[in-house]
Length: 526
Image 1 (spheres, rainbow, N blue to C red):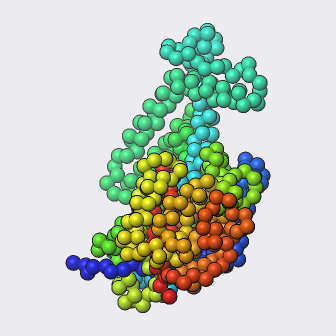
Image 2: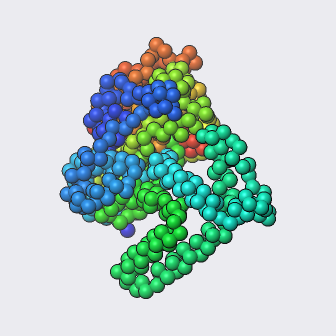
């Protein structure tokens, strides 16, 4: 039976963030009180109306590390098949493994006693969009081919005879050429007639017959591969015979499958050749806290000795930015809006944040030096509103986290808020009032790093840990003279760097849908 775990420490970390490709540049960015956000020049975002945070990342920085362990073909496969979410997470994990000697070897020795939890706020949107666009383009060409080739449309044109059932949609012919209305009408028109094409049904029957033949005689792997090749040749021959375009179901790259939500976690287990549970916890903007909770609980239960926990999200996406703007959460001014100031909204950003946590007794007996101690992680739901947090929901998480960590408001040196630069900032200040003292410093960093979706909690928690370790709170870039008139505790809101005497920090993460994560950290070096 495993011995009880008395404490969980943080022993490695890595970040991919706007303006910061690693921990050193991350600390320098924050220490300079600057912002990594800049206006997007994308036409669909008004060429400057929306400030975003593009992650500083090059996969080449990690290629040699991967090549040394798994060879050049593996590097090329990651480059070709994996989207940004996997690459960002792999890069941040490699950084975490480089934090100090002994971590990588300990994880490999633990094998299935090391778990991996890597979540995402929105998934790899670019890969999903590419698949959707490929399918849409192929479908339009496909439908046009079979509509024009089909006897149903020929009969209608020659005899005016309509198929039974639903009548056809608007005929696009009278509409203005190259107009959006004609394009949409033509797509609906072709889809209607293709669906009634006897010739298309005959093609599909022959296609299915090929599929049935191709799966025979597959007793071993070589036979299976030969069957796949034979099937592909027969399908090509059928298409050549008919003269049809490639079917839509062949137009989507399989990369869509390789980049689903659990792929970053799975790839990390492959890189390290470990076999413990690996999956993707998802809690919107609280995902980093949810991932830490998963790792921490697994260690406390004795199911793991170490866990790799973190988040990854894509580069700023135009559709997502538009949706957030539609929800009045992102300002279209072209300027950076810091928390607690104009309350106009937040800014999209992408990247990754990865932590390696472990049983302190186990890790430190092997010479690992803690970066911080993870004293508590508590989760709750608002059960009230999909965006605006209630007071009771987050307070439940905070109360449980404080109880588990054995701390009181007087112990809290720093509290870092979710603070998105919206009116919700004022609500946050009120809901944490019972959990901090008059001496507690308040930080918020989305004006520096943007809203990294799932990543923000991790970036901000890392900044909190760095502040605790040095005894100096890193500046936030917030202009104190422009704080909103309704902001209370003005003297506690951190703007420039400030000394801090305590070594306990609290991080609040508030996710869309109402999920809250509250993390209590204790500095390790003071």
